[in-house]
Amino acid sequence: MASVWYIMVAFPCAVGAIVLAILHIYRHLLNYTEPTYQRFIVRMIFLVPVYAVMSFLSLVLPDKSIYFDSIREIYDAWVIYNFLSLCLAWVGGPGAVVSSLTGRVLKPSWFLMTCCFPSIPLDGRFIRRCKQGALQFVILKPILVVITFILYSKGKYEDGDFSVNQAYLYITIIYTVSYSVALYALALFYVACRDLLRPFNPVPKFVMIKSVVFLTYWQGVLVFLAAKSGLIKTSDEAADVQNLVLCVEMLAAAVGLAIAFPYKEYAGANVGISGGFRGNLAHALKFNDFYHDTVHQFAPTYHDYVLYNNESDSNGAATKYRSRTFVPTGPEMDNARKSKPDSLGSLEELQLSTLPTSGTNTTSSSSQVDLEAIKSSLLKENLANQSQPYDLSSLIDTDLSNANNNYPNEVPAVDVEIDLSKQ
Image (cartoon, rainbow, N blue to C red; front, side, top):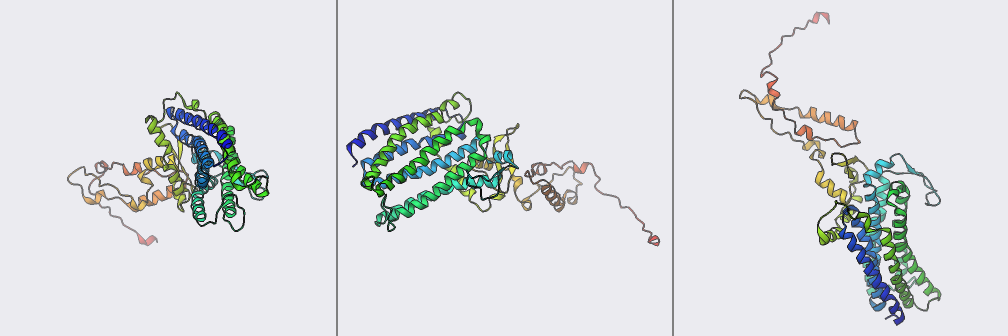
């Protein structure tokens, strides 16, 4: 167990941070008028209780600290993913981003470390790469945790031991690279979309999330390096210092998140989910959006999907964008599954219902339709306009029942004489 003084300081800070964060979450759930946004906000606020509880337990039960630290680090990845998803939801989804940024590029910059690369088009591929950058960290971190547990049970892993014979050094390198890629993807997305995000005052939110997630990680690395260099006596004491500092920092983080993500922005609106407190909490904690993102962002057939914008047009229907670079994700995927028209299927699956007859003298030949001509016409029109998916609902629902009223059942033959003498 850590020093009594450490525990006496850490305990009130951890309790205060947890109380403030839970109260903040409670108010958001009571005013759950923007589920698309608040779902991600609630998940990010949960960072404070998770960090505070895990850090304090690591102080009290140092022998089990590897398990508590792993839970804390997994939640780091979860927060990065949710913040990127929140930014995308703010601007109306990936489709709205592509529509707004079409033709623009991200110029080479020393600050963004893109000086050696050509200009980056701000298209669907860029958005997809940003999402993949965040998702790879969420996927990789649990895998590293399992590997860490296995190596720890074999005596090959010890926190703070940078020896080449221990796995801590190599796990830390892999983790740092993956972590940096995720934060870099988040930074690129913010720079590219800062004009679209400006109405949502993203700067304090971005700074808050980056500070809590990014600085706390490097703080832990520096503390263990201090133990390695002799500034701190042992790695165990370094771990205690790190956990104590985190408990204190979470109290400040709870206040900062309450300022950056105020619930009052969503209070009083007559929209959203009316599922009550429990229903809202269940909606916020569902992982279906993460599942859809993971499947579709890494699917090899991502270009075959139609992207759905979060915003609706004047008729209330979701705005559609044809893109060969990414797919609907999260709440967009749910909307896509519900509203995807049958006409987006293959033309080979197109079936016309049997035409009703208008009289007893109607023959079967008068009700036949040239399917090949229809397919040819549709293909030509589809090639001429790739920007929007073709809607066949009007064709399928066409009523041809009155077709026989306008034409005779039999067409009289016409004798045609061809004079070959003029050839």
